Image (cartoon, rainbow, N blue to C red):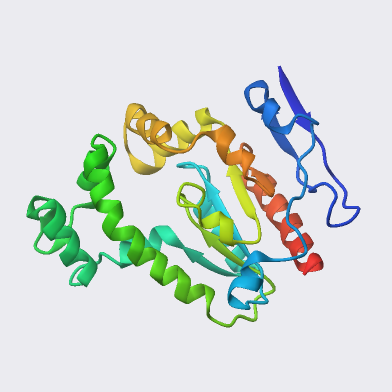
Length: 249
């Protein structure tokens, strides 16, 4: 049985989010009243912590859920964004100190002429918890430092978006003003992931299994964008949320 929620109007900032979303029975318990409640308070923890007046929202989702597409659309609307996936690549780029630290830690077998074999490392990390822990111990502090610098910069954007696949796992969401979850059924993730990354269905399934569960991710959501449909449907939701965030702040 599928329950479809239609939340098509705003009343005020403490009422319901105006986004159509689809929730199946396995996730229904997360929203026992059948309503997605806007949880972002008027008082911002981030504003108090670093005296930043521009609200910052975290954007997250599972593999192949559409994070990059959504982030690109927010950027096209003039919103300042930061992608931690790109940061993670930048901090260990060729000839960086991060790359040197990583090679020392995991061995030169993962490097070719100074360049990291990312595909091999990614595949091995999903098979080895110890390797994953070693890599993250080097990359995460470097990324965190870059994010901190970005957060402390002045901005004229009405709000900003920090995109991170590990937003919740690394507790980054705790210092932000809200969480935007890009949600898609697992079947869609498998389909898109295999087509996009040219990987086997089992490889994509292993990645999904290694990530935080869909239900747990939705449990942290202030806003949910349903990416189970087409691009037009996705764009409509992004525009609606953009207008609300602009109006609220």
